[in-house]
Length: 308
Image 1 (cartoon, rainbow, N blue to C red):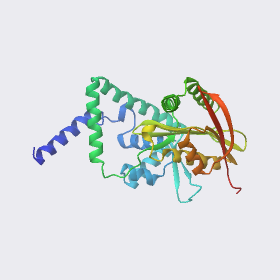
Image 2 (image 1 turned 180 degrees about the horizontal axis):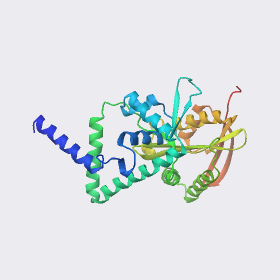
Image 3 (image 1 turned 135 degrees about the vertical axis):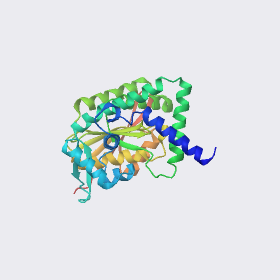
Image 4 (image 1 turned 90 degrees about the vertical axis):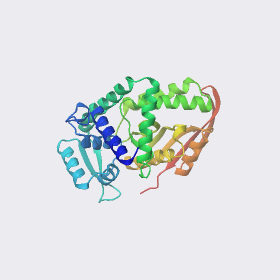
C-alpha cells in the first residue's frame, strides 16, 4: 500500500469513527455541549484545581479560544476561579456544584455509549478493538510529554473502588482477611456521611481512567488532621503516586488550619512507611495487636507543622 492509499484509509477511518461516536451531532452524547466544551469540562472534573495555562497546553487549545469557553462557563455558573495563595498571578479553576451537575449526565452518557458499542461485540473482538486503540494512542502520541496519571477529587462510585482495591491488594500481598475490607468500608462510609469539605478531602489517582490509588485527610480534632486509606495499585507503582498523594494531603492540611497530621499504619507496610518518613512524619508509638487474621505491630506516626 502506497502513501496515498494509506492517507485514504486514515480519512475513511476518521469519517467512520466520528459517525460511530456521535461527533457529528450538535451536542456530544446527547447534551448541549459541543466536543471542545465537553473536553474542557472533563478535564476540570478530573483535575485538582488546574490553571487555564495547563488546560490549554494539555488540550492543545488556543489561549484565546479556551478563554472564551471558560468565560462562558463562568457566566453560566459552571466554573469558578480562585487566586493562588502561592502565586498571586496564577488562578485555579474548579467546577462549581452546578458545573458538576451539568457534567454528570455527559459523563454517564459517554460511558453508556462506549459500553453499548463494546457490548455488541464478543469478548475477543472487544480485546482487539481496545488493543488497536492503545496502539493508535501509543504510536501517534509517542512523542507527547504528558503525565502518566492524574489526581482528582472523589466522585460518585469511587468509594466502592477504594474498598475493592484495599481488599484485593492487602489479601494478595499480606494475606489479610475480609475484616480489613470491612474496616475500609466503615471508614469510607463515615467519610461520606460526615464529610466537611472545608477540612476533609479525598484524592483519587487514575491511570487511563482506572482508579489506581487513594488517600483521605479527615478531621481527628480541631487542630489535628488524620491521613487515612493511602494505597497505590501494584500495577501503578513506580510513578510517584504515593508520595504525591501524601504531599497533597499535607498541603491541604496546612491550608485547612491543622497544626498536626497523624496516621496509623503497620510495620509490615514498608513502602508506605518510607513515603511517610520522607514526607517528614516521625514514628511516635508502637503496639502489638491481632487483626485481619495476623499478629501485627501497629504504628502511630505524626507530623507537626512549623509555627507560622
